[in-house]
Length: 536
Image (cartoon, rainbow, N blue to C red):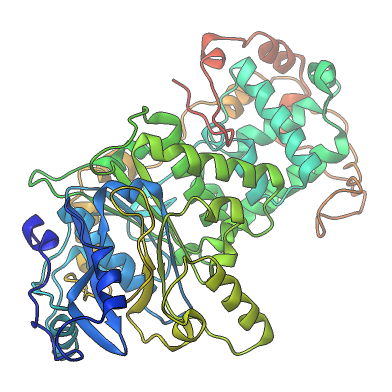
């Protein structure tokens, strides 16, 4: 799709007959609210009195996409196709896009679409000159679990706040984990993977290490036991592969092709659907890392990146107050760095009010109202829209697949009128590409050689193992969990054989080493709102 095609209004009368010619006054007023002068994305055509009006296109200005947005709707109402439609037009405008492919059906954005009767009918209805076309696409997978280039983060970079969420620690345990990271940062201890973190936690509750944190509160044996058990359970679920090196550089998401098209970065997630806390929190790490690295640029004529945060409700479920505050502040501030964020979920009530208030662009698909709880959510959703000539409560339950209620920020920053919209058909393939084609695309990527092979270089754990010739200490009893320990972490006082880490951290060599590691490496760590960091 060319820029001229994207910006041109559909010719009047190119769809089926709609009403009696001229738009009624209320519809004309709505249509005027979307008559922008600058570059914009074409979402679809206005629907009024049940008829689609291709002479009243509904559009989204490119300049306001860093003001964030929401794509919501019940399952099966067309949210995925809306993401695809927006992403391919952004790519055509030279804007890179990040998409999380939760269901495994978005890889088709890399290939031209297939014409068919339904596509032709939809294009005719909305006045769309449909032409098949794919986008330049990079495929990723968390830790290599899937077809894409592996995305990994070091434990140091992931930080204590996000790690506490995936480990499901309570507030007290999260604060204790923060002390562990603070100590490791200050001593230059490299937390590359989870075994490095276990070693430091074990040291800080050993006889030699107990005094290290005394001045800032210390680490109780009970809390350390909870953290160590949570880490072990986390690894047993196979999550350890997400942490390590080479660590992914989120700057890769900002690439533009030689032809000036924005690259679509597609993160495949079906392989980790049974770990929703992990993948939603990992997406937040990617966003926080971008915020940490990007310079302030203010308002641009087009964003540097648009980041779609799918299954957004998983991010907020069970989140602590501190975590929600960090999300709110990150979303508020990242717009000045040229990044737009779209949250994708079922209803606006899935998103906290503090975050929802910052989402200026809204595409609301149909909602179901089968239960009293559904009806309550429907009324709450209606109250989040500007006043409208539509009966929104009725409209939102009667929208068809591929239809939505839209309101966006205009070029002046003011909200546009609410518009019932029949959305355009994506021009890329609406479905997954074959697995062999996907594998070939991944192996042909310039990033494959950079990130595919995991590296287990010498870090804290290995250094300590190499310097620990002392005999094993006597077996110790595992401390009982604190009253604030999460359910299921165990309550028995079981006798255990000492591990190699126990032997290492119990040695005087380890104590001497950790006390001498206040290096420049440690001093160069600075942490973001989420506690994320990179060693520079």
